Length: 191
Image (cartoon, rainbow, N blue to C red; front, side):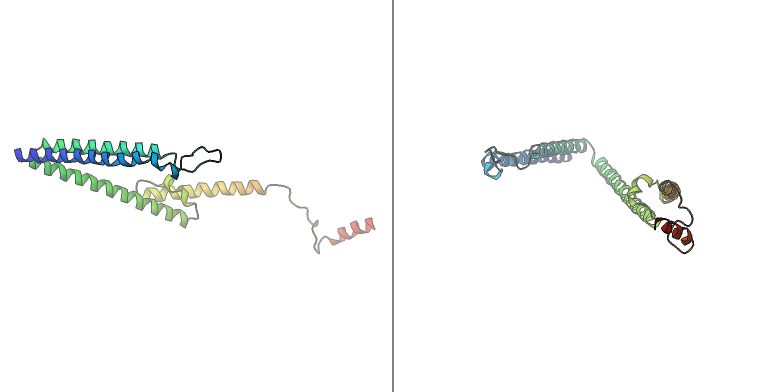
């Protein structure tokens, strides 16, 4: 038991040492940044313009994520250190199982999204609606796509009819064989 506690403590100490080494390794590029002023383009009026304005924000976000990861690793190591070896094995098994379930869920979602897009393409609908029509399973998705297809077709038909509304041409007013007698009279009138 005492050996297990020491191993967990050593693991936590190693993680903390690695985090501080990483942090120390990242300070060197920060110190080198002022010397890299030549890399920044100059404006015509002589002022320097930063090449990447979001670098500071990206670095801050990275440092924050790294600190959170180190904190989580230390908490995990401390939690394992307080457990018996059997409990550690059980805990790690549960953790692996939960991760596996998460990956399977993500895989099912990805497959369902692809199937939904295929259904939409088969029905002649834009595949961009896939996320809106995706159900809990293939049957629910199929029902959603069929209902959407029905409503979509009705909406398209209504728009087509709306745009085609207008006055209908009078019979015989075109150039053709049927109404040429009236046309000849009109031409004679002007001659």
